[in-house]
Image (cartoon, rainbow, N blue to C red):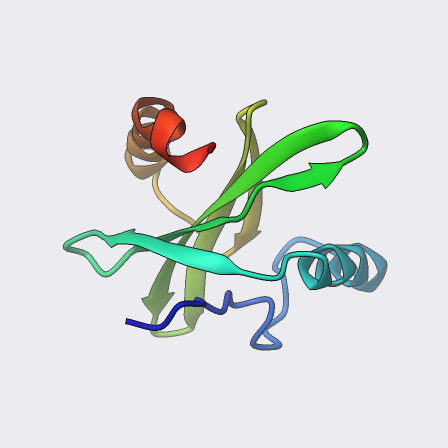
Length: 114
């Protein structure tokens, strides 16, 4: 398995719901992240990757990214620990999937945020 997972944004895909300036800000933010580590893959193909610890604005944080390939691109969403701030990236997950991801991140936070 590769030591670095590349997100849809890094592969040059558009970020649904964001204008060009917002997408550029997020792309710039992605440049600050040197490594995304694979965590696991769910049965439906959704991959979970996480960043190294990032020190930004006086806060140590970890980004947890969920991404699943679709016929038209990707479904992806990101959670920022320790604040549990969710950011949609592109495509869409169902409400049930989002609730599962939230529970998953909360129950795995001690392993991801280290």
